[in-house]
Amino acid sequence: MGLDFICHDQKYHGNIGFLFDDKNDEPTFTFYVTKSFDTGNKRYFGRKNLLERTELNYIENNSLQILERAVSVYHAMADSELTRVINL
Image (tube, rainbow, N blue to C red; front, side, top):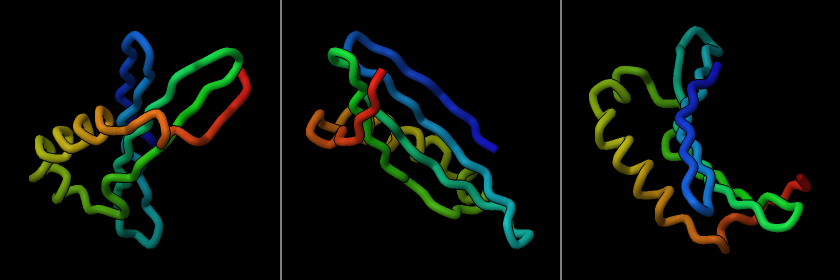
């Protein structure tokens, strides 16, 4: 299961998302940020996990700090870090 927040500006496309994992009867979440840009017929993108296998109560108690960090990481991601490529 995933929950996505999508952002578009003049050059970049961004995504802040949660992935839900309920394996082993202990639900946890992975929180990530992606950033991409298109040039020609290619999309360059990168992804950074901010939290992995984190319990919901931690996210609830720290949601503002997590979102602030996500936005900061998104803005700090340089084009040189967007190394994955797909053809459009």
